[in-house]
Image (cartoon, rainbow, N blue to C red):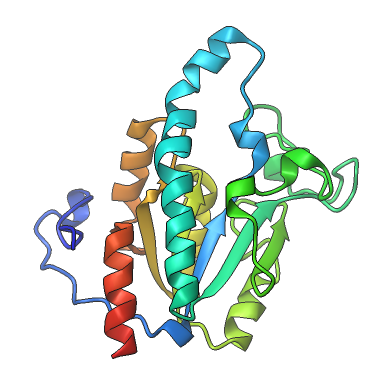
Length: 227
């Protein structure tokens, strides 16, 4: 296991006691994969922008997507519910989007649900028994029927993976924590635009809203819950 009990600590928790061991019964646990969609893997036609985003795409291709695919397989084999959340509006003109996705700038997102760029990346194609929720908000919990699904299935623990660490992942984690779910964020299955943003947000949410762990840790938690 990693040193997750001491890693990614902010000022608030620098001197705190280590947290208790995490035990996640597979039948009460869901893996939530957030917004790993085609649109974010497209190379910008502007060479300067393409270069600026090159480290992000490299992390996605070399680390996040392969690790997430492996984690999905491991979780599925242990009986964990697999849930995908993706940004997708129901109206072609996007008038059903929340205000945060209508504002100008990076977060302006017009992704009609059937368009190719709004689909999940091919490496993470959902299985027949997996759940996919659509959202037009940052938080997957407030922007979909995810809350109801989790409660109906008796889920108490949520494993979070996806992008962007400092945006939709963070918003979802905070919402889940407010609803009293036990949350872990899988560092090696997440990314932000830069490493600095990624690490900074992990420190902000760790120990307060979730525990930041590695994919290898998650398997230990699930195996402990199955004993």
